[in-house]
Image (tube, rainbow, N blue to C red):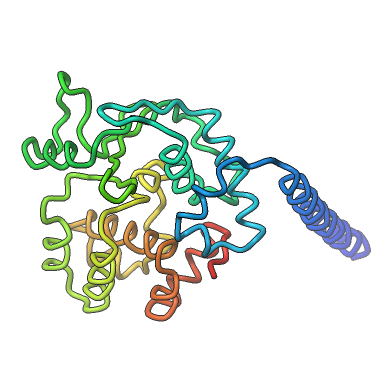
Amino acid sequence: MDFLIVFLWFIFFIYLFYFLYSLFSYKLLLNRLKKIDFPYTDFLNSIPEYHKLSKDLQLKIKYSILLFMKTKQFVGVGVEVDDKKMVQISFFACLLVLNKNQCYDNLKYIYLYPVSLLKERVEKEGGVFIKKNFLIAGEKINESVILGWDENNGQIYMIKNRINSLTILKREIKEEKYKKLIDRFQQLGEYKLKEWIDLLEIDTKLLFSEKEIEDYYQQPYLLSEITIIYIELFFRDSKFLKQNFPTIFKKLSKVFNVKMK
């Protein structure tokens, strides 16, 4: 009995030490980040999602952006790659791993195409890989990802083979709550995070009940698409998600370890 008590106290002190060490390390990291010269503040301030982060997370993502830009090679195909584009791409990539000890380690190349060209290719080829034109929209191959840049509004988009995909998705689902979710997402426009979500391979079981997964077993892409929409809204319209899907909002807050304003 005495041994058990001693063992439990030992476990408690180990946990306490780990907690205090983590807290101290986090505060130390924030102090270091405050001293880093971030030369792209104006570009970052133009991204609405950046202002939804807390002050501490804003500091962390600045460091993450610098690390991402340093470790990845950006290649423009019919698009001039400049600091603004790299900052915006890096921001959305780092947003999903802000409190995780990774920075897409296997990713080395980011190819940037005009969004109009990608849409045209997807419509013509249905997202099929074409060697002579290298890659089609939003497809990742080995160490690369393909993104689209819209020169008209200066925005980065992830273009998947989505010919009427949301319309089809909305028609096939049964629950009205999902239709409302899709309606709100369609108001925001194209995907911005899809490619990075695909890379992370987030398990749908984290968000859905066993019954929901069983109901959609014959059409697993439904859960996959809805999961991506949930995550997009978590970062881009957290207020809507929190008000209409509070349980999902709490789960995503835990998955990403991020508190949205």
